[in-house]
Length: 161
Image (cartoon, rainbow, N blue to C red; front, side, top):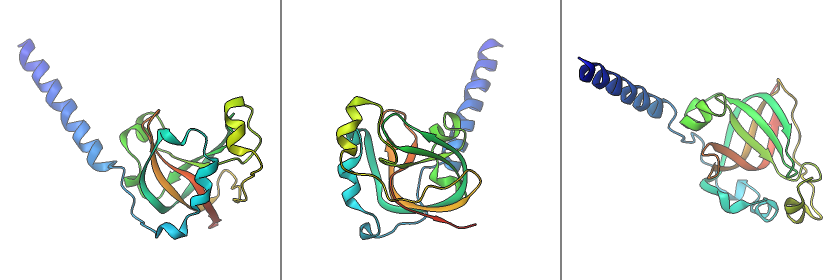
């Protein structure tokens, strides 16, 4: 009897995981030419080796749900995306169903190791406010340290309404 219960639980967990991976497949719907994104921004990304580029340039729309000024100088924007397929399971479980969008060098870094990345550079990207609907353009990456998908670095943000 115990073996049957364990087998049913394992099968259920596997089915839930498969359903989650199908729903949150971590795939962009919009593929833009690389020239629509500013490749020069990569010179100012702190610890860029942790970011695995999945699409050189994309755009995503959604509502801003949080803003957080990181110690590395980046502004982290929590975006509730219109199209959930851009998220992966780590975004859903660990990231509260948000896509993290990072404006690099938005403010002076506190973290000493990040200061060289922002030296003589300050982002000109428009900062949104919580509640804004935005369209964000930038590189679509997976953060190798955390495992979730992000748009990082951000080339442009347009306020939709």
